[in-house]
Image 1 (cartoon, rainbow, N blue to C red):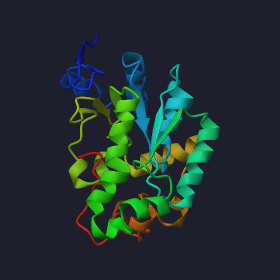
Image 2: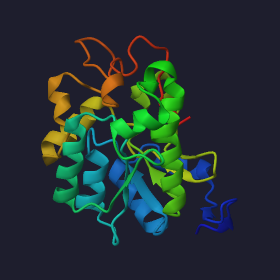
Image 3: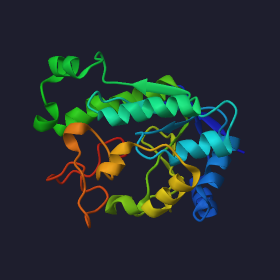
Image 4: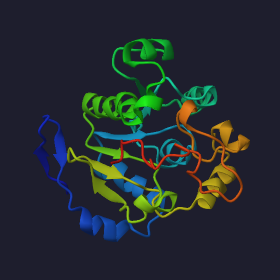
Amino acid sequence: MAQCTASPVGTPSLDFDLAPLNQQFDAASPQEILSWCAENIPQGLVQTSAFSLLVVTHMLYREVQPNPPVPVIFLDTLHHFPETLQTVERAKAFYNLDLHVYRAAGVDSRTAFAARYGDQLWQHDVNQFHYLTKVEPLQRALSDLGVRAWITGRRRDQSEARQAMPIFERDKEGRIKVNPLANWSRKDLWNYTYQHQVIYNPLHDQGYTSIGDEPLTTPVAVGEHERAGRWRGSVKTECGIHL
């Protein structure tokens, strides 16, 4: 059984020994991992979603079904594709999501963002752009919701930097990060999506294989890596929330 200790911000942290957990669950199914989380982390567990492929959300809301449901955090950068925002609304209605939307501080539109932080900031300082639109809003969300563990959709085959990613890890604040899809491939994701008729972002049907902000995302050509359309022409491989 987990023991809780006080974190620097006053939110109880989970004192699990992650090494044996990673041994136990390295070959487990995502559903088994999520079920363990729901049973052993009944409070302070959330999912973060970019509303690209909704496999984890479907598993949580249709298979695992914890009560109360796991809150879902969406970072509205104000620079998403319209299709992404439409997917958010469809999923919210279809799953009756406990959805929590966070944006850059003090703004609620692209125009307001440009007025406050500079026009086309991503061209001048992409790291600052991501800090304002993703990193800081996520930290605010995790703090506001008293999060002790958060579920991601990352996979080991997505990039070289993620190849050694464990199922369970800790962020810099000591919260547990859960990566239930770590062992899955892109083919596994689509097989599940089609088999269970899971909602997905329609941009996938237009050649987008990894979907981020509209100004920083392009379609991917046949034979290119899944994430080749993110930050094209740049050495950047992460937006910052997982670093």
